[in-house]
Amino acid sequence: MGVEGCENLRATTLHSLALRGLMRAHVLQATGRTPRPLNEFEKKPLEADLAHNFGGLREVQKRIKAYESAWAREQHHTPEAAADPVDVAFEQALLAWLLFHRAMLIGEVIPIFLEYVRNDPHAPERSDYDHVLVDEYQDLNRAEQELIGLLGSNAEECIVGDDDQSIYSFKHAHPQGIRTWAQDEEPLPMDVEMAGCLRCPGQVVRMANSLISRNVNRDPGRVLNPIDANGEGQVRVIRYATVDQETAGVSNIIADLVEGGVHPGHILVLAQRDVIGTPIYEALIERGIPSKSYYAEAELETEFAQERYAYLRLLSDSDDRVALRWLVGLYGNKWNEAGYRRVRHECEGTGLSPWAILSALDDDEIHLPYTNNVRIRFQEVRVRIDQLRALMEAGGIPAVVDELFPDGEDRVRDLRELMTTTLDEQPDLTIQEFLGAISDAITKPEIPENVEEVRVMSLHKSKGLSSPVTIIAGCVEGLLPRQPAGGLTPQETLASIEEQRRLFYVGITRVKAKPNEYPGHLFLTSARQMPLGDAMHARITPAQINFGQARLLPSRFLGEFDGHAPATEVG
View 1: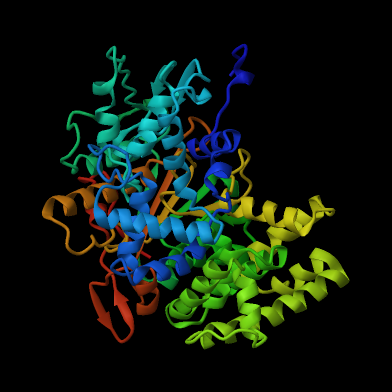
View 2 (view 1 turned 120 degrees about the vertical axis):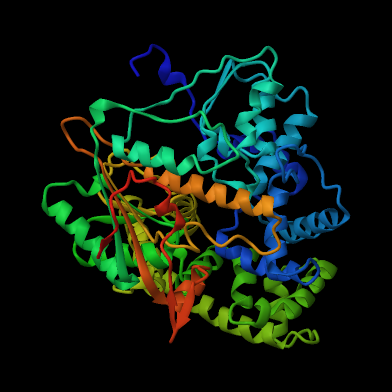
């Protein structure tokens, strides 16, 4: 920046700041919480264990998100303790599960920290800062907004954001948050509008304006203004017969661009589901084009990889109750919830760990009714852990990695590369230190400043990024936009579609033009059909089903550019 003292600025995510604050204030220790985060796949047995009493898996998943937002589901709600009796009972059951398994949800750090700062007027975090600058404010839910207000209560506060890019309603963030922020501030803040689009070429700016103008719940007078120096850019809309042809077509486009001199790091591929994005990524790898996948926990997309990662965790700590719960539930009906419930009850009555109780069951030292499936599964886990311990003693961590994540196995290719690189850079790590490094890399992947590879990710993940070449694949109904959930009111359905339109708006405006260097390329692709199983996996509702194939319609958003986009090509 060239500004004196700027090296003293501290940039952090709100989540990281909150976790550091909780550790500094010993809040987690005092409340008996263990900062062992659950990976997304590790939530499955938790959800199964709660589903019976709380309306099924979908309802449990929704209530977990509400709990993580301190029960403030709407912008006008106040983040506070659960009031609804079902919410209260759910929170008690959820916390009991997490306390017993010595774990935390990643999303519950904010409400815990908010409660601490709100209830302690002398909390140092209230006076630590002279200035608080918040970027992407429209992505914050009410709990996060209130926390920001407390952190900035003695500071000059500046927020930056765009309600047209509010895309996180699943965590109860709403565009009204940034629209109404100034109303709650004393004195009235200064409002500075930045309407010039310094990033995108002119054609993309006009497409973006036409698209977002279809949203009725926004200021209709707000538009982006193109910058003449950015030029017009180049846009193509391509329709393929099948998703396999779309995969091949996108990889051909990228290969031609790279061969023509475009750096791989200047290419961004966005696909909202891995069933579309991952085949493109694999096709690029097969062609030798440097590429990297940035899907959330992309290294752990398959059950094959998940099982091996769980074994690595259990090898590191036999009292990792989350990993053990996941492994003994794997392959079982409803994650062997009924039998495991009896095991947990025995643990809570005796004070012994799940490993100790399951070992006693396996050794016929105790007998618990209706736990046979859990006991049989634990026998398999126990044998496997003994084998891994023997390997560890003989060949160290590299031998374990070779066994669990073998070279040449595509389903764990990314994990193996991550692990072998970590071992090469830090060969003296203990198994616990090694697991910690790998866990951090998986749950908090960083996109480097100097990008060397084609990046493949979801539209949500692309927020804040830009690229001279942006390709959005899978522009089909049921995915962009996704099918609204059943049971919504007309107003809720409209809000869902408008958020999906904002998401598409975010995607197309990732295109970056740089005068005299690159014009800015945007490719929008779709397929007419895909295997029904893949469509179901991606939760795409097909327009029609023919002989195991899902018929797909082009996204309605492609028709909302009001003539500013070129005609659709046949791929």
